[in-house]
Length: 335
Image: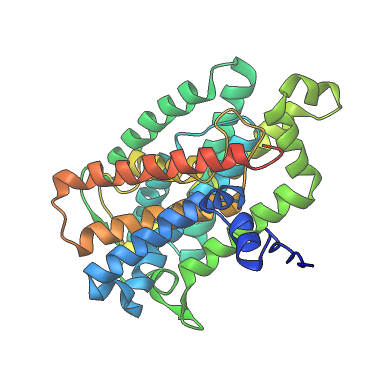
């Protein structure tokens, strides 16, 4: 009598492993698309340019992205609440020009810092008042404000560059435990914003307002008060970013900061997964977006890409990252 040999079990270890892991699984990892693009850019640049991985270059990248990160942090919270401020980069430009003028005229550093932060906060508050009580679309109101502030910055400088010598040099150039002070400030700001969004009533109100402002108001949230606070906070962070930029450059010049800085921050926030329509925002995604933009800009410089092509390459990388991130966002349950 012949004995039947039991057939091999179909779910071997290899088959189970293969069934569990596939490239599509990456889409279910939060911000997986951004991480992939960032890794690919880093690997490609490291292979093509030996100087990319040097400590000096990495520290330079950290200093450069720290200013953008502070503005992007404020934008993340504001956009989550359904708002928008296109004038933060221009607000930073005004802070740079006013701060440099005060320091150049011999004003104490502490007084200069306080005055410029108050000015930047006031600018943000004015934006909030316009958006809240005139019903002008935030995009329109703050874009107009950006153009106005760019003009003010040019008027303050009178078209000339102003140096501040060694004033504020430590903030822009010194390090603590090998990490630039600018990066420490940026990390603290991002951490505070991230914790506020996740664990505080203020953060939960922002999500509620972005989801449905009318329902948020019916729920007892002081929507007008929250909007004013959010725009004032955005202004204050723009002022802080301006002071960081001034300390790093050691001078104020026409077109420092402004719309280019703003567009970079907006791009970082959007490709990081924060919704332009409000109701969804993530600081982790914003950090990845800021780092990606900084690495791409640094890579283009190290590879000596013609300046005419730099915007094309940067835009292409951002488009790919945004598309991958959007597919990933739709693949994650609850999004």
